[in-house]
Amino acid sequence: MAFLSKKQLKQMEFKYLGSNVLISDKASVYNCKNISIGDNSRIDDFCIISSGDGEIEIGKYVHIACFSSLIGKETIVMEDFSGLSSRVSIYSSSDDYSGNYLTNPTVPEKYCNVVHKPVSLKKHVIIGTGSVILPGVTIGEGTAIGALSLVNKNCKPNMIYSGIPAKLVTKRNIEIYKLEEILLSENDD
Image (cartoon, rainbow, N blue to C red; front, side, top):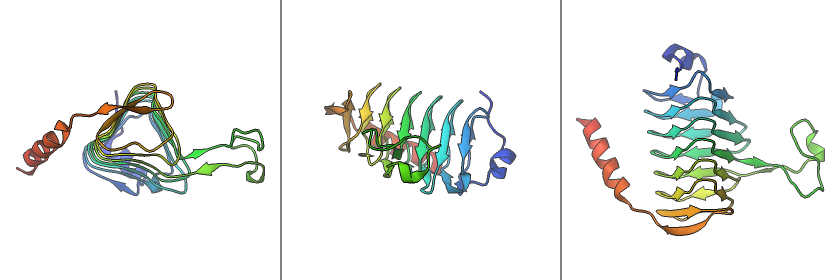
């Protein structure tokens, strides 16, 4: 995988760009002035990061695996140590599928009913491959979402959810917090 150079990243004019950020040269990033990316984060091949009026905030030590997308008009936040497995889609906007309105971005807004709501992934959230996160969802700190899940409601902290729609499965081990503390203390030395 080839990554954009520091010079190329600087030319993109991100709202904020931390150190040691890696973005694949095959990723597509739109509206960089509304995108912040923290230290030691990585975005892989064929990802789409498309910010609307709201911002996309990617914390430190965040990984976004290949073919994933963050799209929408509202804010999307991925806090420190969160991650997306391949083919995860996060939407902060969604068309009305009821049949009462037209859908898609080629249609004038007066004929559409698009919902825009922020999405938040708290620290240490991991999303399994092929999952979809819908507008208005907050996933609590330390929570894991199983592969191929549809998350349409908020998720409690330190739990594991899975399914369509995602349902609570069990508690998640919280060893991750100790490991974070060790990693950060080693970097302070």
